[in-house]
Image 1 (tube, rainbow, N blue to C red):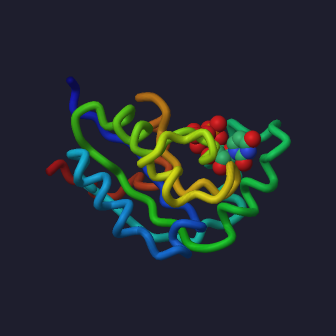
Image 2: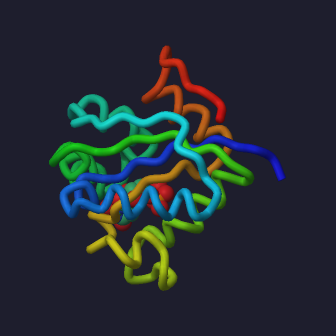
Amino acid sequence: MAIERTLSIIKPDAVAKNVIGQIYARFEAAGLKVIAARMAHLSRAEAEAFYAVHKARPFFKDLVDFMISGPVMIQVLEGKNAILKNRDLMGATDPKKADAGTIRADFADSIDANAVHGSDAAETAKEEISFFFAGMNVYSR
Ligand code: UDP
């Protein structure tokens, strides 16, 4: 199994619930290492650029409004099979459909306010890590 990196965002709803530490504990228990992290309050332009792939979708404006409604915690996770492992920890996009014990089942309120983002493939992981951490010195642990 390859050592991978993936981009994770703890969204404004989960930051507001003060569960950053509880979500980090799940990453750690699953063998994912936090190798870079920063808190940010995204601008509208940043959120629109990050979610540009969803620009034509009906939920785009609500998604951007939500993502800029408060601070987010952004991290790079590294570990074996990190992309899929993080997606498994997150659970389905709609928390009502997420498996018991997943982050979204336990901390998300709705499909709009769904606690976390995680890259869905190797190519997007690379792009998303560059989007938030370009020019920063990201270590390997
Ligand atoms: N989203 C939404 N309504 C929808 C579908 C998606 O608000 O009907 C939001 C939701 O916050 C989701 C994000 O758009 O996390 C990106 O959608 P995607 O299908 O990529 O889901 P994810 O990869 O986050 O599970």
